[in-house]
Each structure stands twice: as structure tokens, then as C-alpha cells.
Amino acid sequence: MRTFITLTLAAVLFAACAKQNDQMSKCENDSWDKVFPLSEKVSHKKVSFQNQYGLTLVGDLYQPKGLSDQVPSTKYAAIAVSGPFGATKEQSSGLYAMKMAERGFIALAFDPSYTGESSGEPRRTASPDINTEDFMAAVDFLSKQENADAGRIGIIGICGWGGIALNAAAADPRIKATVASTMYDMTRVSGNGYYDSADSEQARHEARQALAAQRLADPAAMAGGVVDPLPDDAPQFVKDYHDYYKTARGYHVRSGNSNDGWRVIGTQAFANSRFLYYINEIRSAVLVMHGEKAHSRYFGEAAYHYMVDGKAEGYKSVVAPNPCPENKELLIIPGASHCDLYDGGFTGSAGTGEPKNLIPWDKLAGFFNKNLQ
Image 1 (cartoon, rainbow, N blue to C red):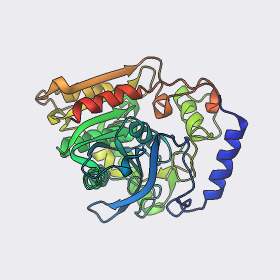
Image 2 (cartoon, rainbow, N blue to C red; image 1 turned 135 degrees about the horizontal axis):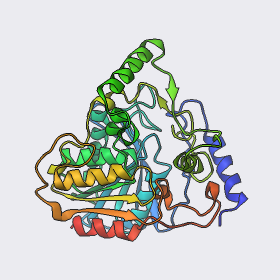
Image 3 (tube, helix red, strand yellow; image 1 turned 60 degrees about the vertical axis):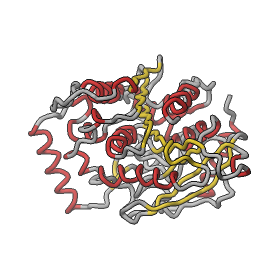
Image 4 (cartoon, rainbow, N blue to C red; image 1 turned 45 degrees about the vertical axis):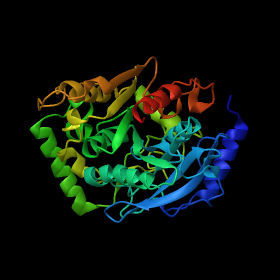
């Protein structure tokens, strides 16, 4: 059970770290600024590395405790984690990385370019190219770690970064296993709207006109983030986002989702792209994990079927079936919503109830153990 002490400590910690610029808002390395407690089973250190565009990515490296005392010849499988889209490594991705480190992996949670503590101006923008490169740069970094086995590297993408992870796996055969958790296809939703409700030339033309006008009116304008305060008639999934991002359960000062959102034109390129065109050619192992009650479930199911069968609702192109369908899996978590797979979920609002523990950590570890041999 979470207590008011937890809420108070979280508020004090975030206030101590807060500044106006999200990139420059950094706690000291010996301060714990995550939304989850540090496991006694792992060690943690802040790291940084560059992608091929010259941007510096900042991450948290989690390792099984005692690993640093072992001889370098002892090699471990490694996992890079990012997401949700608009979130930071202090939130869900850090939790996933830590849980994998508890189970024997070297795990890196990182802030994407233009986000959190990573570099890039203007802040909180996105690129299909650069964000895919971010994952591949994380693989570069892990491959060079003394105790990591460069031939045994996997990735986890959460929410919007689930689609990016699949795109990276299609592009980079060094990625031997991929988990897409509670995934969004950011290119599909940007181009077609939710549930493909704006999948028409006219709707896209109107959206393009609005974005073009925005570039001249105020290219730095921000929008999105989580609705706060909640309207009485807010859909359940909007309430779920608020419950995670706007409370001590998941609030973080550097997270766009926790605060003022994203640049209005920050995902303009996504609407004219498609991440998942080549995922039917991914030969390495993939696990698509989604909640039974998630509003986003259709993204994961469609991506899985397109990846395995070469066709799915929402995808216009029909391509060849996957050459390696046997190592692809779709896992639907009973009773889980979209945000339940950020941290496992809680029974009460604002994360004050009992944990639901809906994320099957041992299942994920088993998937990586099997496919990162």
C-alpha cells in the first residue's frame, strides 16, 4: 500500500530537481529521481552516448549487483529500453530496465533525442529516422560494454516506442529479440487518426494545411500532454493517462506527458511515414504484449498480424509472409489497460491502492533468455 509519506517524498524530490528547461533539469548523480524505488538486487549508474546525428543520449544503466566485481570475460545479454512516447527514463522504461537487470541482464533505459536529459533542440520533437537511430545507437553503446555480449542484445519499446522498436528491429539485425509493450504505431495514428477515423485524403490534406500554417504562426508552440484537470466526460483511457502521469505514481518534471506535451509540429513527419512496412522481414524474435482492455490494443494486434502474415487491417500494402513466423508471439494480458503495462497497474486511483502486478516480468525474462542465447 502506498502512503502519504511516499507522495510527500516524491513531491519534495521532484521540486528539488525542477527547472524550466527539461534538458537542463538534472539531479545530482547520487540522487534517486525515478518514480519507482531502486531494487536492492541491481546497481545503477548514469551514462551517455552519441547517435550518428551527433546528438548525446543520456541513459540509466542497470546491472545485476556484483556484476562489476566479475572478470570482464563474463559476458551477459543486454537490453535497451525506451518509451513511452513523450516520457523519460525515470518512468516506465527505467522500471522495465531495472526489472530485467534483477533477472540477470545488463539493461539500459535511455531518453530519446530532444527529450528528457538527452540533447537536441528544439525540445520535445521527433523524427522517424532519428528515433529509430536512437535505438541502434543504444545497441552500439551496449555492444561496447565490458561485460555485455555484443551478439546477445535485445530491445524493449513501450507505447509509441513499441512501433519504433519494431522499425529498429527491421533495420538492424544485431537486435536479436524485441518486445513491443502496449504499443502505438505513431505513424499510423498520426496519418489516420485513432481507429483510422481520419484515414482519407481530405482529412490528411486538412491536417497538413493546419501544420503548415502552424510552422509560420508559432513553430515552438506546445500541445498535448495529459489533460489536467480532467473533464467529467473524459474517456477511460484519458483518465488512465492522468492517473499515471499526473500523480506521484508516474509524474516526472522532465516528462512531456507529465507536463506541457509536445511541439505541435513535432511529429509532422510521422503522418507522412509508415514505420512498420518491413516488419514482415524481421527474422529475429518478437513479442508483442498488450492489455486486453487497452484502447491501443488494435495497434499491437495489427502489427503482429502484418509482421507474421504480411497483411492486416489498417495496412494497405500486402507483402510476403514472414520467413521466420515461429519466433513471433502475441501476448494479451487479461484485464490490463494501456497504462497498466507502464508499471503493472494499481487497484486505486493515483496509484494509491494495491499493485496489480500485471506485467509478467518472468515471462519477458524467459523470452529474452530463450532468444538471446
